[in-house]
Image 1 (cartoon, rainbow, N blue to C red):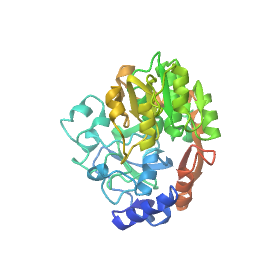
Image 2 (tube, rainbow, N blue to C red):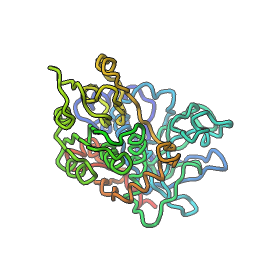
Image 3 (cartoon, one colour):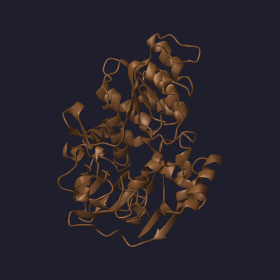
Image 4 (tube, rainbow, N blue to C red):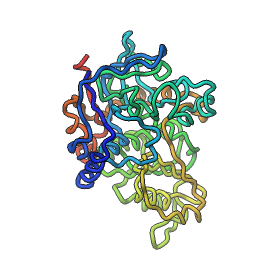
Length: 388
């Protein structure tokens, strides 16, 4: 089989980081990735199956890896060489079309009794990501034993698989995993009856808008979108106020009737801010526009950032991470993937898949993903259907 592989080569990671400082996504062109012919990953046990990807998306965390910008926090929960790709719709050997829920928790690792998080259904809080029947890896796509979606075959535990109904297209199914992340973020803190701000209108930001509209019942959803197509999609998915890049703090001030200090920090602000970017500037702006006692939810993966935490302290703002998915207490313990599947179908979110590429054009695909908004797109994926 063919697979895109990341190996533990510090010099390549360093070169990728330098290249990405010139242009995002450029790390793919300096040798960090390799397209190789490999044997399919061995099945670690009887409850494992092979999955042949049809479509596999390119995520922001994948781009961070390609550009050598991933946080060293991940080093203990990644094993090399790994094949990226965790947004996967594919086929099992017995003909099921499935999406893969990629978190490699206790059930996948054969660990009994499970940790407290997994025992409650919240395998997004698994404490055993580096032990058990497989090598370390927080998700499929970061573990040397499982392979990943940027290949012709990967290995998955049966507990990771969700059947896809016949009336859901491959394109829509490829959006279920990122929409599960958005749903989990949107349901992580109450938004009902308040003003919600969303910073960033890529895949996750648009998913949060749709999820808050479906389950949060906010009075206003104020969104910053950098590009025209993002603004159009944000409005179509339920944003009440859409502004350009750099205008969100002023828009939140206007909507909430807040005063502002000379540095732009609001005395009041949004009840909840969803930061779908994850940079020093975006987190700083998120805290600045959050009301006292409100919540900033980090949806976009932040790596090494520099922040002045004084306003967080003085405004008593809660800074909360939103990682992955599991079960949703706000919806009676429903599985996040089930909720996300309904959202994808009801809001036609397959339209967010803007372009696909074959594996041998991986550098072009990653360049497109890194600049998707500027090029009028949202989600970019690898298309492996011709390989079946």
